[in-house]
Image (cartoon, rainbow, N blue to C red; front, side, top):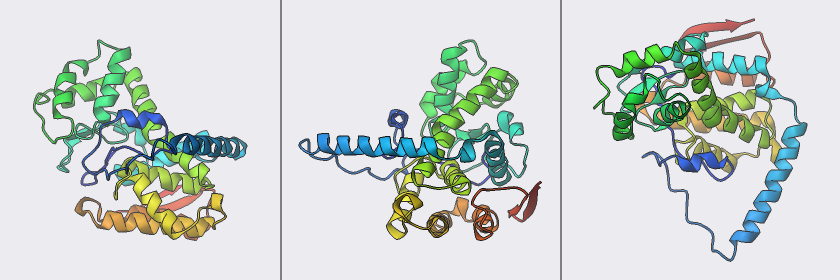
Length: 299
C-alpha cells in the first residue's frame, strides 16, 4: 500500500518487540543493535526485563482497546491508505503491484510488501506453506535470489500478473492481512500501549512502522522511538502524552526530510499533527485531514 516515491523499509527491531523479527535478515538501513551484555549480567537483565514485560502486559490488559477495536483498526487502515495510495479504500490495494523506482524492486499489496526488503518473500513463503499450489509459488526461487536488491531477474514478465490474479483468492488476501498485523500493526500498537499512549498515539506509531519498518537504525521505527525518548518522557514514565507525541512527530519528520523519497511530510503536518493539536487523543470521528494537498473526511 505504498504510494509511488515513498520508501518502506523492513528491518529488525529491538528486544522489546516479539521474537519473530529476529528471523528477518538485516536490511542495509539497519543500525547496529549494539554488543550483548556480559554473560555475568545477562540473567539479572533478563529477569528484570521479564518482570517489566509482565507489568506492561497487565497494564495493557487493563487498558481500553484503543486502535485494536474493530472500528478504530478500520480507521487506521483508511488513514494509512490516504497517505500510501491516495484513497480511503485500502482493500483495493490487495492486487496492487508496481516497481515505483525506489530501489526496492516490486512493491505490492496492502502494506507495500517489497521484493527487495524481505517482507514480500516472507509473505509468499508463509502463504505457500499453507497453499502450495498457489500461482506465486513458482516465483519463490527468484524471490529468494532478488531479496535485498531491486532486481527483477526471474520475475519478469509474469510476476505482476500472477500477483494480481492471486489477489482475487480470499486466502491470499487473508494472508496479506495476517502478515500486516504480525509485522507492523500488532507490534506498533503493543509498543504504543506499553508507552501509555492512547488511540492517536497508537496510530502514530503504526503509521511510522509502515513507512520506516521495525528497525533500530536511525531511520527505523525503534530508532526513531529511541531518539524521541531521549528528548521526552512517554506517559508510562509520567510524561505528558501530547508533549511526547509532538516530540516523536518532530523526530520522525526530521528523518523523513533527510530522504529524498520521503521529503513530503504532509502525512504528519496536515494529518497527524492536526489531530494532536486538536487534542483528539482518542482519534474520534469526524476527521478531516490533508495528504499531498488532497482533503479527506471521515464522518
